[in-house]
Image (cartoon, helix red, strand yellow):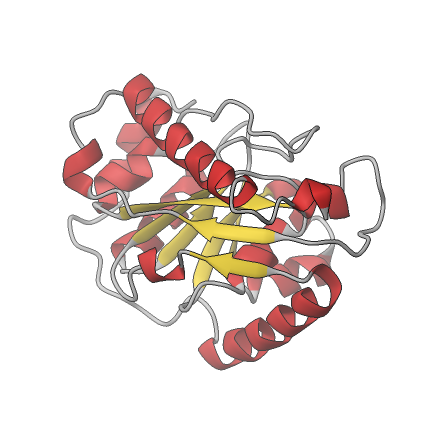
Length: 234
């Protein structure tokens, strides 16, 4: 949860209209990797995407997803037809090699105890018209279900006027639960819901906002599980 002073600091550190600077990721490297990740994920996880048409091809987009495993960022990103940055727990950047690798895919370090720096960078990218992926649960689900969203990301949406796209991933927990060191083959589905426009959320308070977005992500998960291709029975 952001303190009021942190929110003011983020606001004061941002210009009213940020102009795009150099690309946050090398688009050629990103696209090359995205193709290979998508191919590998189809072979290993039989991944399927739905609702991709709900993702705006330009302008600020905040993708809000549930969090089942370490697989989520690359598997979700591979299905988005544009480059995507994502907020990742700071501890994932402790290894220099891995840090450099995930930064090349647009990862933004987020310190859960002091999230100011990560949120400011996420806001900057949104204001430059980029897409940013976040996992408001804050950590991987212990059982594959959606757990309460943490406060704080409403500021990213409101201050950037981004379209919020709810996302759900299912099957990733079965392929790589928290209790296992390595993933195993399985079936994974990703669904992108209808975008939530700024006028639909800007007047909501924090509690109302969280309730609405979490409900939309839950709807996406239910869409996957009720589609006739229930991953739990695969």
